[in-house]
Length: 294
Image 1 (cartoon, rainbow, N blue to C red):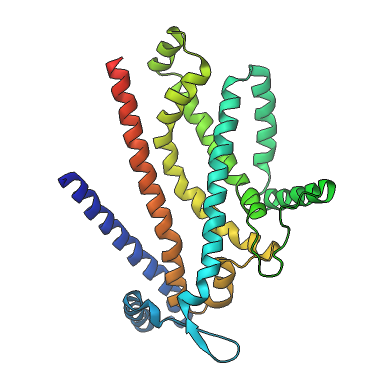
Image 2 (cartoon, helix red, strand yellow):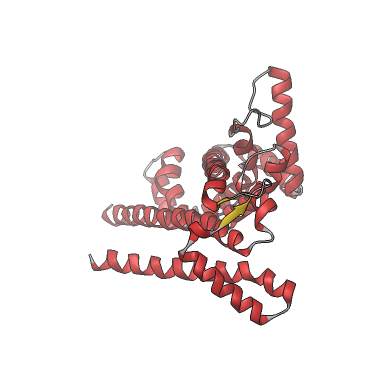
């Protein structure tokens, strides 16, 4: 009970620090524009006020009316969150499958695959994104299978941006996983499992894979931040109603909007990482107990 309470207190402290950092980052443009610390500290005070009064953040419309921030941003935020976490889920599944195939194929295939992967990895990220989108458009033109190329009639598309956005994270995860698994293969338990006659598939999923997860979870923050920064490109190219388009229109000149959008984007990331760390650490502890018992 005390341990759970300590974890809750620690999480509250970390979230408080994150919100304070976001507040400072959001107010820095005010300091750059005005070059006045008085305005900067005044902005911090205003930001603290709107942290506890978010319903008072109003968005001016073209007709002169003002509407609450959350009422305007809700749909775009929901669309972006679905695309980001959908792309992350696809990237995780694809990277696991690729890592597994890379683990069981013969050395000549590994060498050929490594060469192709090196060429693709050397390309600029933006070029890979554009090529991905063009590839799915080619599929649509060739087969007639519609993945939703643009957003028509207010109906948001998800499949195409999720598939396209997942490509770079899948590459990063594959790279990290193969490197981690190569390290795990040098450990005694891997040789012991082989000596007991276990198949490579069993060893991969029961031992190698989950022993690398705790290391991999550290890279999710970097990958998640990359996906957020790339989301603006997808929203422009695919004409999506998303959170980054909202930032481009309203958030650049209003630090209150920027502050709340950063909070809305980072808190789900924090929850995801902490939940993943808890599940993976519990899983790996069970694995260690099984190995000791064996």
